[in-house]
Image (tube, rainbow, N blue to C red):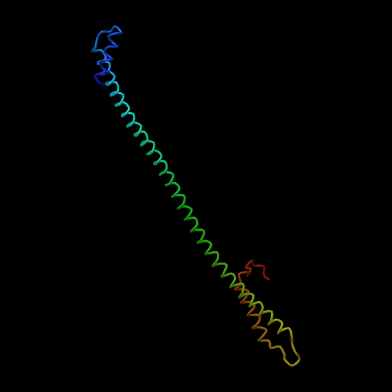
Length: 158
């Protein structure tokens, strides 16, 4: 306080009947001590608040890390499943290609057998049927049917 203000304050206190000019100084000192104590308390609260924020942030980071780890494991599992599915798909595609090739070969053999049968059935007057050709045709048919994936081995005797 300026000297003029202090003097006016002392006069006001004297007029009020207190008469102790030292009292305002004590009140000011107590107020200053209280302000300092409140400042320290505010500083401690600020540090505590920052610590709480750090703890909360660490908790959220820990939870986020756990979720990320879980998602990463799930992603890896899905990738492995996808890879297994792709491998199975490749195997199925190879089997399909082999089946298509075998079916094509079987179609060709069946067409040859049909043509051989038609040729054996049709006997022009000037070309007699040669029994060796018929036996050869029957052997081709038996071999083709035995090699076929559709060959039945049920013991039916047919």
